[in-house]
Image 1 (cartoon, rainbow, N blue to C red):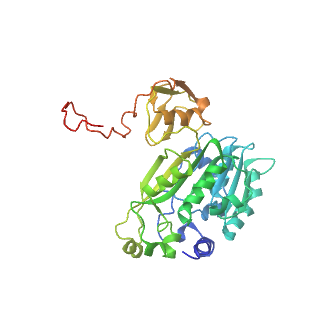
Image 2 (cartoon, rainbow, N blue to C red; image 1 turned 135 degrees about the vertical axis):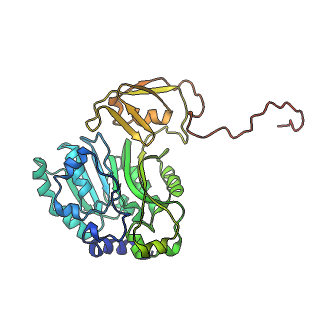
Image 3 (spheres, rainbow, N blue to C red; image 1 turned 30 degrees about the horizontal axis):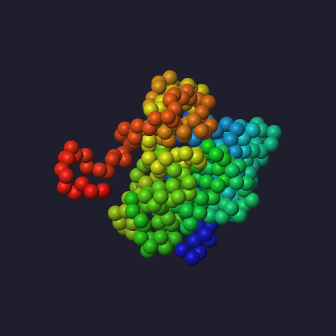
Length: 351
């Protein structure tokens, strides 16, 4: 762990030359991208694509005109996809600490400007450690969206990454990222294995530790967008890992004042009006909130805010106020912890 940053830089800058050099499928995107991502990806240079080591789809919908930060941008694949989708008035900044990867990304800035038909490039790359975002001269509260693709697991101080990301977001901004998580805390011996760390496994956070870290950074109520189990498919590494289970998960985290730790019911509802280019007929907020166009649907206070206090507001009609609280939103857990009983026994009746 002492030389972790250098080990990671060496692994991704020298050990790996292309996606096929990975020894497991942990750093591989498991689901095919939607049409709008595929169309943008078709414009991305072959060498940039060949050095892609992500594990998920990290670019959400409705991003035109946004200012985006990519943590661990590597060869620039996701930055260039985002650069196309934000349009000429949007801007994308990629941060990476690996010289070899940064060189590939920077070599194709002008190539993609021409491909996109822009007068000037809207994508830039800077060298930096994502655990030291506060030292990179990035203005606090200046980004609408932060993305990252299978990189935060490679950081030693993940709490710092999340806290710095929260500070860099504008109010109503989001962090939308994919990473690898484990069903338990990974043993120290495995954390010290350079190959397993470089393959995005031994640095994976225990899922519950991640939730606590995200909330501690200010991201109340993390939402899962997509999750899939990871199969290592390498006999030697499977023996080392044993029965630990790993998952590729895409989360969206919001910087919104007033989000509560649980889904509270205020009798509110929303209706999707359509208009988002990537999904005019329906909008999917996360893995359990799907909004067909025109259908009025009841929502908890947190979901209401995730739509009302963000870039999605213009795409929805909103119903209800905050005047009356009805307890926990039905089906969202958080049941009252007290035994319900009609007993009126006087025994033990003191306060």
